[in-house]
Length: 289
Image: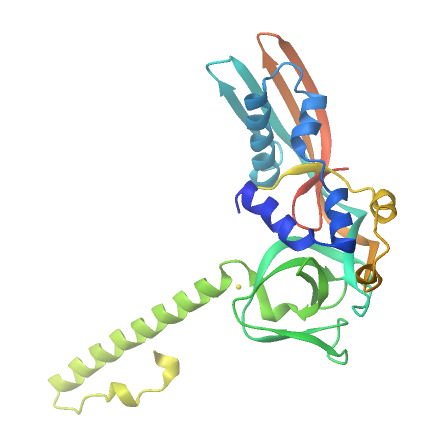
């Protein structure tokens, strides 16, 4: 997903009234400001944005030890971005959930857009015994916050907050549904072709052809960098409205990937170097920790 689209997903998931609005305020510090403070002293605005994009790409795609280089031939600005290591860390992230949705235990952070693979129940808790919160149609888009530790259930966000839990077998990353349908179509076409070949061979030995109409149908699931959220500041900013009473903002414990990123930047004005540790947040965007 493009960086701009990811930012849009963040806004779509969290920005709103009450608790959602407060959370949106809390996550407003993006990478541009961070890079500007750390290594942007010798770069102009366009070069800082370019280094931000390259840093995000490196965090998302580069292997450990791999160095990404960038250069602007017009300004003579250069950057070397190296992912030094990847590890799993335990940390806390902020979520907003409806008060009827059970508070999650530890989550294995996902933080990615998912889609519903078939019409499915979303439940208030990670169990078949929990009441149904709502039913989502096939193809609907949600934000997968994280998988409940030790269970095959995923906490999902929609309409600006966590709406409940869905069984992991019923959702997949964006594009999963299209791939499944394409694979099913390809399988059906291959089966039809095979049947045609068998028909032709049968006709050669004076055997009756297959009736294809009578055959069973089964033969035919970049991101931006930003500083972590200050939940105390976020909660303190909540308006005292009836809507807020229906939602809970809290920190939840997660196991999340973290990457150590070393950045060297130079220009005719001078050079700077910094090392940061970034981890994925609720929405999949990389946060400085």
